[in-house]
Image: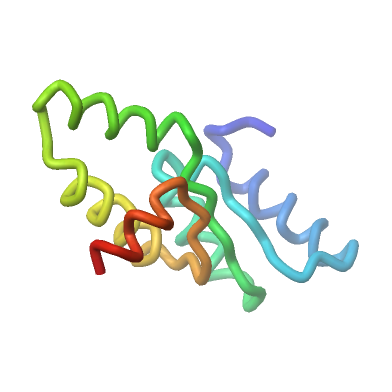
Length: 101
């Protein structure tokens, strides 16, 4: 799928639902917030977003180097995904987030 083509992503979602999908998923989540929003606006199916390992590793590494606060960056990232329209966010921060909140 062409990552720069939101219309193609929407067509794929349509096909997935026609084939019996119970949940739609967008990944990677952060670079595709616009896709998450477009899918949410167009379809009434549950929507999951996968905060992939590269997104997680990027924040972990920046925090380890002292460039940002991991907790603040992680929460901001996950809230952005939710705000874009995801019903469910799959993330490597799940255990840490449970303790932070």
